[in-house]
Length: 298
Image (cartoon, rainbow, N blue to C red; front, side):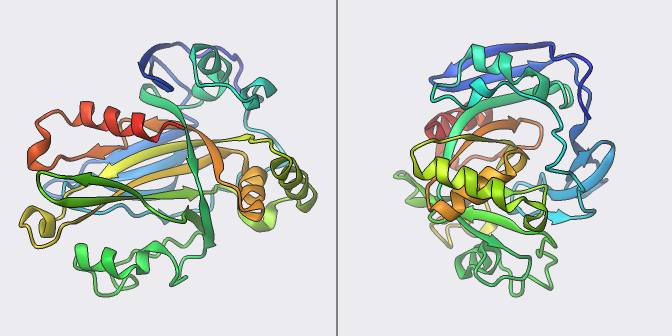
């Protein structure tokens, strides 16, 4: 699918160095974050592609952890680009107004709403299959914080492969004594078996020679405060940056093979993100989320 026009109608504003806010007045909704309202229950969040639900990506509960589950295989092809973007977005340069204009054909495929755009770096581990006990969802600290005995019984196995960060980013909260660990997830929309080996090798060689091509992903940030933290039973808190790869699957595999931290041009959905606060953090989740995103820019 290619858009009929490369001009998305949006307003952009610089929120911090390297962090931009974009408000789309309209969009084609080819990639769409859906929220299913449930009476008396937490609302479920979904990733829809071309009108079809493909992934369930947790819910908006203030005490629930991040997770994702494949509902239907995305069936995107690396042989046919969803949208053609200028090669200039891969040049070593900061995210600025000009770059946002250059990715407007991709923005035009999203639904209307508010997004943050920034570049971040993730040192990848994986890929992990659904039942791989080396993945985060089998982490003993994760299970302890959210009182999980068996990820399989809790329905946490995704049915789809994913990458994770090798080490979490740390944020210390001196007033409460809480140590927050941010875990990063990268979820491809094209399986490894569909990639062209020669393309992966080409990007791997480029990366080993010093190039850092950007991978584009549609992301969300989820930070809930589990009951164990609210009650002071634990001083460990986990937060999550997760993204679905929109363009750059061969680059993703190449970065992992090369053992080099990967560059991601991130379009973060405000609608899909939740950022609940610790007691000492005040009463402005949006401002605190912006502060966190600015800390991830690199």
